[in-house]
Image (cartoon, rainbow, N blue to C red; front, top):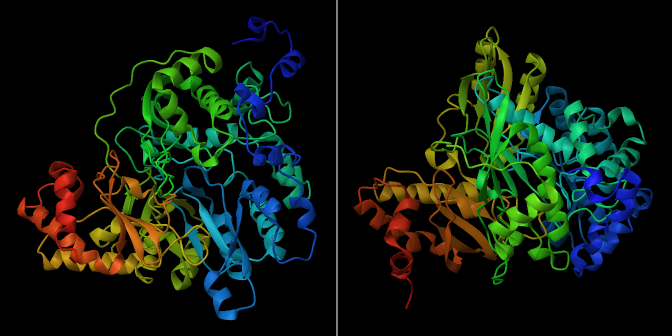
Length: 601
């Protein structure tokens, strides 16, 4: 597109001719949309409330705080014991594209979590660190220190593009470098521009040397945000507008054959192809994935992304911001539970989406998909050669939680050997840039803290995930992270008792929002009440198939009794297939019969 094609000869005319996405398509909108517009680009009342003496933020400030990377939480258990009101604290989430946490930033986070947090760090399922337990009076110091350590929390939450995922492995081969670079470029290209200034003003008192500094390529792409269609009508936020998106937006990149990022669960998933020199040739593009849903509300559901075709590498960033602009204009701004891109795809169809995209937002060619081959769930645990002179080692962290002696000693290793850290979508941690001459010393240091065989964790724990849930998450209906070790032990013991020598991909969440992507698992528990869970079955080990809900409120004390007939059926096949494949082969009616065969009359 160009300005002249639309009867406009300069940027000023375009800015006058394009309506705000608040009123795009004359759609009704919720009050929250006006609240965002009135916030002066995510500033007030947050700025004012940072200065008062209250131990918590009001709801209005909390809504803006999310865009700055933080959620206000209440420790329910501490509140009940004390009986003196809520125990207010902040959870803070970082922006770590492709899971990269440079060594100095990791050291700063370790210090902050010990001094001003709850002495833990947590690797999330989106490859970024979270800190918990921060008091309101300390939040500015914590975020300011992170920014001065060349980190950021901007857009880690809120109605904007979230942390961009990519394979964490720092391989200097194949398409891996191109995929990692693309993740960083997308993160910068889709960063809210006026909000960057608000962010710097709030947390480091306007010291712009800490601002995001996009590459020349990203700067060039950002200029296209003022083109017709993509332009929001707001010169300060040319892509987002003053109301930002209807809801959160998620992107991921990967390489052919590597599905470590759950590529089909994102608003945009890009499978990156590079040439022999490592330059990006283009991407297979998938759109409209998402995990969030609500119990007993059929209009909300988990959904896999649809393939729309292959786009040349030089147009990928333009494509990504065009898709975001389409979601900005057509996402439901009235009902937040129906606001993600997946519902636009579901309601309007893929053909409508492609026609709308290529007519109004993106005029380059979208070709047929390239062959990707078979994908597997990579995890990079153990030792791997990063390049000719460098190594990295993947360390398993159940639920991504870093605490106690392991946290302390990993910090010492990173500091002593000047290493960088990368986080995986499976909530594990990679120590990177280990020189050939350092490998033995790093390995000995890891053995001293219990990482004797990091490449061989217990099979059932290897790919298991859980969300934090109780006691801090306000949405949690029951346990997840704290319950996961016991759950895995119970299922593992049951498999051994039944002489089944196979593992299962298990995920657990405390509510239906799907933060641990449970709907892709072979066996998932989704909180539906205190000590009760929905039982989902039938996902695949390579994360290419949605699971199906079978039981709505299974008491957790009935877990083994419920699963035993299904496990025995699986055993009778010789357990040659995965549990997920076995469930699909049996069919829903047969599976339900097995699950209920031991039920009390």
